[in-house]
Length: 261
Length: 124
Image (tube, rainbow over all chains, first blue to last red; front, side):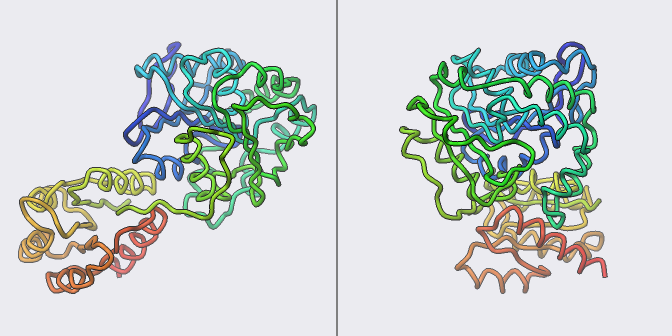
């Protein structure tokens, strides 16, 4: 287990691979752990970091750190602490919002950005969905129990402080990210699982007039965890995006599994 | 949880196997050549050894034979990692005392599953 001390609290993270930095930020239902398949697939080309946000996993659980701005600040402090000068980001749900805000505020530190399951516009139902059902109960609905890592992912999810869930869901329930998108110049993929019951999948009409640096992707067979539901497709999409000269030419490729040669 | 020794000279593969098996709950130690593998196996007494065939200093075959001749380590199951298309290596590995083989390329998911199967079989 790796950790840094920030604001007198531990921030847990795991790191794997060699190459340009790629930072993975989890969402409400878990911790760094569900990024393992992504880290495995991309480790040959990227140095992948996956951290636990304040209030989640094995990171510090001080309620004063749960404000959304503190979570965004955590990312910057984490990078400074590890000497990461620029990184690509992939954020999921809560982590999607954190990484998007970070990218908007720190364009010079952000190479590329992919958000997965971003709650794009204010949604009053988000708080209830995130807080009235436990992470474990959500995982039972959303993740295949036959996965060999299901128990580990579930154990991690139970470590979340309910206060961290509530504070972050409250903040995002009234947030409309579309103005931020219009200011973002970083290459950006906005991805959603088309069958996500936790985060509303934005209608096409909400995304009219996106800048050319932004590419919208819908993963048809995915719910809230495209990185698990369609791991091979997701990881191939991510790898292609990270290496793409022209984001607008991205398309979902056929099944591809990284093979160790 | 079981302790596994991975002997593999290619760093990317060694790191990926180590990462995969550690977060599948195993304790993992590693070696980058056959000679190191023999030394570490004697020190660490792992529950399973995953051995690449072609390694510098000492090949996987030689390391396997040495470990099988050595009292304290001869019971440790050894699995060879062999490249697809090198089926003759598989037979040579079994002749050297391996209990099984895993063909490269392998996916992390299949690796974990195969390791579980092999450990379960060896425990019987």
